Each structure stands twice: as structure tokens, then as C-alpha cells.
Image (cartoon, rainbow, N blue to C red; front, side, top):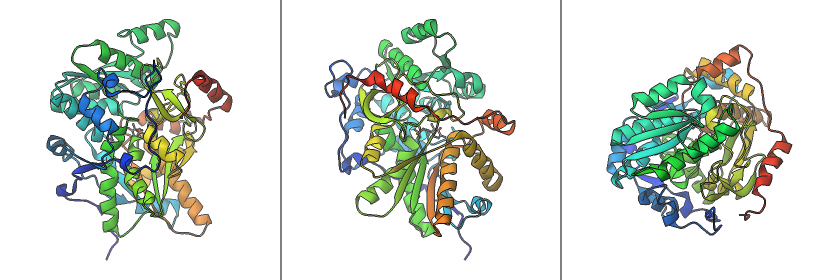
Length: 454
Ligand SMILES: *Cc1c(COP(=O)(O)O)cnc(C)c1O
């Protein structure tokens, strides 16, 4: 029988429950701290920012959390997402490894992000919230949440990191098409934005700044809450549909992966594919789990595990995470979605406990393998996704050198059809590599002196 290269599940196979890794972690996550008192945060401290139903999910230790029916209905628009074996990319690489990928680029917004945007819009809606605010880097999250808020009849304002806003004008149009309002950040619409613009009129912006603006807006506006597309526990939770489906599909393929790989910005698509496998690993299964980040924004490989703020203006709780410091403004590079100074506390804990490994790849390698991917497999990957592809190629090469044939599964987090400007720069030789100097990281982390250590 011919090998199956596309494994599609029936709609009835969408997971009915999310997997909560907090139930299984050998060392529970350290609590987030109140930025003023430095005491563990209380649910009521978060109430001006998030609705109570999501706060409850954030702290839940229950292993399985039921996915509400209205959320299932929306997810079914494109879920279960297909799992493929990348036989043509294997040939292009000349590897004997088997490479499988879970294609999250088939969602209407083009990435894994709607997996959490939809439940977040839903939970805010049933809590009586009328309007959401958020930030977006590359524009993927802003687009996903625009679609989701439209589905549930909420208003949305998106603060988009200025450099992306200028590089990716089509993203704004996408968001407007779905009914949202999108402004470049820093903006004149918030106190934080005005202050930063006065000091640094030419700043390219950063996720940290945009988060500050979105939170300020949420706290100071009526019936409004804030929404975040990565990092938080409940976002990692919502993304586990990826890994849960992949496990079923890999079974049909007759494989258990030797290596599971995901690219890491805030950590949500990685958590999505990896956490169900981390659960297996905790329970004795042999599997390597690898997170991949850019050399230009190396929170896992060069940052430190510290309490840090999620945003630039220190409005969020202090979270225990691998970080480069909240003041860190990464070098402009094309994987906008990977330009975040921190990392999901849950992924950080998994890394601390050595249940996963971390690696970094440079921009030129990413585009090289991204182009090879498009020319062999057809789908054009998002710049973020090319990081996972480059790491897969590196692992395949390593296996070759060791004389082994491995099976590798990775999360193909999104398509790059809205990010072609990066490809254009690559083809014209205008892209360079950037390694974050250790000195600069040290300087940025010095701002955390005096805060508690996790
Ligand atoms: C946002 C994004 C990422 C990075 O975010 P995570 O929270 O780390 O998953 C990766 N890939 C794509 C396509 C994205 O849109």
C-alpha cells in the first residue's frame, strides 16, 4: 500500500477537551506576583484585565477542561487540521528521516492563533464584556482575534507594533475587513504611547510597548477587557487541540515521533503541539521535544529564568519566565511573531525541568529552508514557521551523521502569504543574520535587580 502522506480526521475527532499540563508538571509553576506588593497575585487583581471565567482557567489544575459547544462549532470551520508527511521536502533534503507536519495554516486567519482567539472571544462574550483590546506583532494575532470578535459580536481595538504596521499594510486591511480597528503602536491614543513617542519619536515599537497600550486602554474603558495571543496558561491550554489531534493522526500513520519540534515566540504553538507529548514524556515515554527561537531574540537559549514583566511599562504581573528583560527591543527581523522578550511561564517551567530542549536558528538559514519547503511541499511558510523548518532540517542532518532514521513531527504554525516582503528581501540579498550580543542582554536584565527570584 502506498504510504499515506495526508492524514485527515473526521469532524467528530476534534478534541472535546483541552489538555492542562498544570495537572502533570513534576514541579508546579511558581505563582505570578503583584507588581506593587510582590505578593502572589490574587484573582481579583486580574479582574480589570480578564473576565473571571478565563482567570479560573489560568489557575486551574484540572487535567481536562471541556471545550464549550459554541467554541467547538467555530473550530470545526477548519479543524481537525490535516497532518502531512513531507515526502518531497525529505527528498529535497536527501534525508532518510520521516518528517511529519501539522498544518495550522489552514485556518481562516492563516495560523494557529484562532485556536485561542475563538475561546477568548467566547468567554468574554458570556461574561458580558462588549469590547476587547489587544496588541499584535506580525499581525497574525490581531487578524485572528478580529475574526473571532466578529463571530461573537464584540468590538476590538488592535495596537500593532509600528514596524510591522508599516511593513505589512495588508494585515490592517484584513483586521478591518473583520470589523476591528487597528492603530500603529506606540500611538497617541494612550498615556504610555504618548510618553514613549515624545521620548523616542522614531521608535519601531515593540510587543512590550503595544501590550502596555492595550492594557491601559482596557483598564480605562467601559465594558472592556484585554486579550493576549500567547504566553498565558489559558492560551497554551487552548492550543493543545493541535497536539491532541496530531497524536491521533500519528497513530494512523503508524508512528510515534522521536522528536517533536515547534517554533517559539511567546510559546503557544509550541505548547500546543508539545504539551500532550510532554505529558507522555513525564509518564515515561521516550521522546525529544525541541523549541526553536531566532538568534536575534534568544529568550530560551541566552535569557535567564527570572520574574519579569510581560510589558514595557510594568503593568502586568511579574511572571516566572525565561526572559531578555522587559525593556528589550529586538533587532528588526522578519519573524515578527517571534520578537518577544519573554516566554510562556508554562513553557519556561517545562524547560527548567529539562522536559524539553531549546535551540536557536538564524534568519538566513530560516529563509533558505523556507524556500526549499515552498518549492518541495507547495505551502509557503510564515517567517516564524521557517524557524521550525530549519530546526527540522538540522535534526535530520544530525540523524544522518549518526546513521539514524528518525521520525520528526513539527507544528507548521502558519502560511506566509501575508509576509512576502520578507521573501522579497531574502531574494534580493538584503537580509542579514543577527546575533544578540551577550552584553546587551546583560544590560537589559540588570533592570530586574531587586525583584524576587523564582
Ligand atoms: C504568532 C506566531 C508564532 C509565534 O507565537 P507563539 O505564541 O510562540 O506560537 C509562530 N508562528 C506563527 C505563524 C505565528 O503567527
